[in-house]
Length: 176
Image 1 (cartoon, one colour):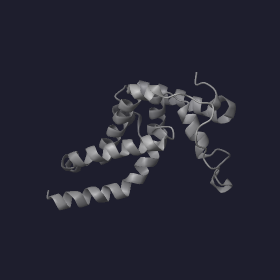
Image 2 (tube, rainbow, N blue to C red):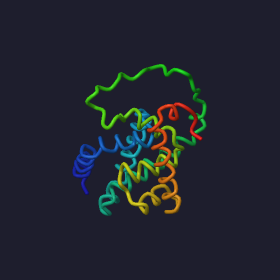
Image 3 (cartoon, rainbow, N blue to C red):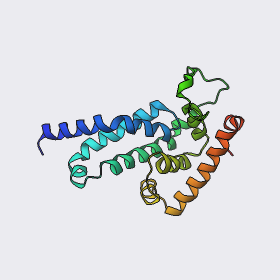
Image 4 (cartoon, helix red, strand yellow):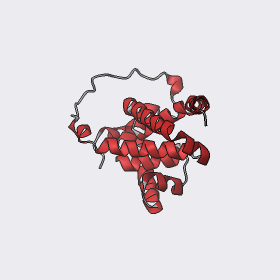
């Protein structure tokens, strides 16, 4: 494959999928858009290197999501992530969403806050299963765990999300 053809194909893929990848990754990171952008950028850089092989196999989606999930796991295990301090008031406040952006009383901020209340592995299982609509088998493969683990994590995660979204006071407290 010639370099210009490779670059054009890859650029077309990025234009078509980057926004969707970023939205989904934001859920995986519980609304941390900066981390989500870093993860997507890392995934796209690694995908570019492997583009000829991935192109032949046609596994773009699975390959890029495996990179994102693995990079996210690496990121949350880094010691530097543990040095963050919790403060009672965040330094920046988000502007309130306009009323027409609300659906059934729950907005994106509430969902991201509830997702942040889940442990990272459970959050990854919930996002991959319910947001990206992956099968149990695909999710297990991406997370490097058993199908039973995916089923239990998604069931527990969905129950916890229902609890957090039903009672706003719960999402402000600890995450059991």
